[in-house]
Length: 139
Image (tube, rainbow, N blue to C red; front, side, top):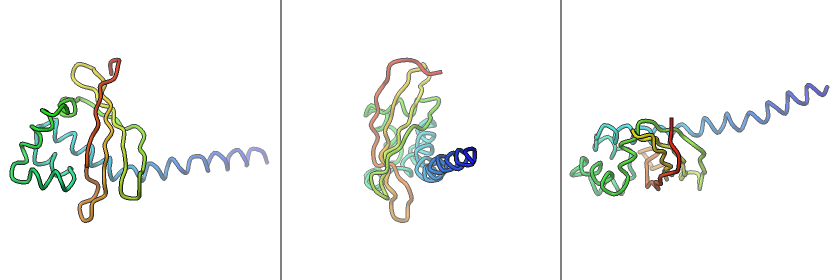
């Protein structure tokens, strides 16, 4: 009987992780898409993953979006060679903060916090990013 309780408890403890993994997918795809576009200096694609305010501001010159991202201190995002996802926090049903770890070509580690919103008819879009370097080197 005790084994059944342990098994049942184990299954219950695994359920939130499974549900969480399913919920993570929509905004993770937007973050990954934008990072990959910035890595290849594709301003148009990078902008397509940005929020409506960014798209309106840069619609006439999407390449300038990628240039401004790099010039504004966010160059390590485009210069990263890998990224991985950390924890996330839902602020409301349509707004999430997602932690992302980036490793650049020199092995430096950067921590980013992406704010994303589920925009009507557009899906999850990046509203802003906070970026900071961290001590240590990545592998």
